[in-house]
Image (cartoon, rainbow, N blue to C red; front, side, top):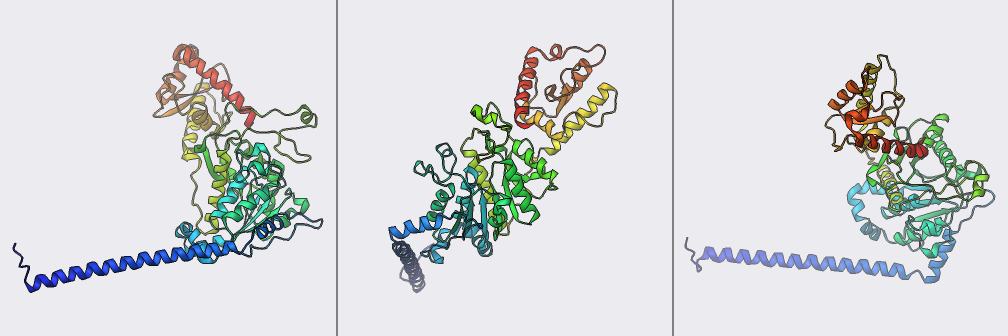
Amino acid sequence: MNFDLNSHKFQLILTAVAASATTYGILSALNAHTRRQLRKQLDRDIEESLNRSTDADRANNFFEGDVTPLSSNGPSVPPSRDPHEFPDHIVREQLARVYSFFGEEGMRKVRAGRVAIVGCGGVGSWAAVMLARSGVEYIRLIDFDQVTLSSLNRHATAMQADVGTPKVHCIARTLRKISRNIEVDCRTDLWRLDDFGGELLEGVDWVVDAIDNISTKVELLKYCHDNDIKVFSSMGAGTKCDPTRIQIADISNTVYDPLARSVRRRLRLLGVTSGIPVVYSTEVPGEVKLLPLPEEEFAKGSVKELGAFDDFRVRILPVLGPLPAIFGLNVASWVLCELAGKPIQNPLPVKGRKKLWERLYRDLLHREEKATGQTINKLPFDEDDAGFIFDDLHRGRSTVPPYNIPARPALARWDSTQPLSLENTIVLEYGEADRHYKECFGEDAKKPEQVWGEETSKVVERRAEEVKRVREWIF
């Protein structure tokens, strides 16, 4: 195809292309200039806002705003907002990613939300930091305790220089560095219902329970439940290391968390059976022991409860730092979504394993009925225990070497001469379970090691020892 470069038509096309390119270049330059001007203006606004507060002002803001001791007549008056807060357009720039997630109306609710965090240790501190980073502009911190060297492995804001200072003040300092618009209300006190506990929770939309003492935790949850105060509770992060086992569920659906079990039972006795969301771990503690306790503590009485105040009995649990942090992040995510009006729908329950556990339980019940020739209404353990046997004790694999993952798993009683128990239950392929009951039960029954070998027998013995250790923690 030939083009006549001197033709009128070609000249028009060339002129149009040149004009378009020029226009595009001008618009691009204008946009770039506008962005640079906006960035410069933003930098000037931030610098001016910071310069309005002298070093002395900041010191006064910290000490006067943080140190709010309780008077003899009840809680102290909450501190006022920082007078040098940022303009709204700067705040919106800082929270741009959260605005894009929740939208205008959702973020309006988040920024207007009022959250009280009871317990400002490893879990509570991380929850506070992420709530502040996500736009919550009122946080009430309630904790009597001080920062110790041993808490530095899990606390979100504490440094070595903070040792000996109240945890609430340590967190407040960091929150005010994150957001100039946040109002941090510090209450250096132990939450107790008979010591103005109700007043400490007045005017908040959500309460975060990060207490590790069972009695106080139950008292707080009961009070919130009875007074229609929304509360999210953290269960035990100590002695755990597997982040994939962390779950969010209603308190009534928790399994294999010693703290959750105790809290659930005590709440049930007080008439509270459900309606409290919690974060907990299904992980069963392994080779982990309580840290040593002085003999004088044992002489005082029971030391089973976790605590650190006056009449509390102390048991010191080993803690891997990342786990309380993950618990706290779960707490913050749940509360933020609730505040924004976009709640987390149907949190995945225990990895969707409940139906499998129920099937394993029913199948074992039928095998036991057939083997004993008797009608059995229930086994010595429940469906959750069946899940523990399969998922935790035998790692989802057959007890028989080479320990394959069963395509259709089944549970079976190992030794027919011994009663059914956690220690005396093994995992087999469905067909292997049929063979086991056929050859190891009845008049001409063989010993199980004759059928499956000595190595399998040793595995069963090792698993029985694990059950004993688990019982010390859970039962």
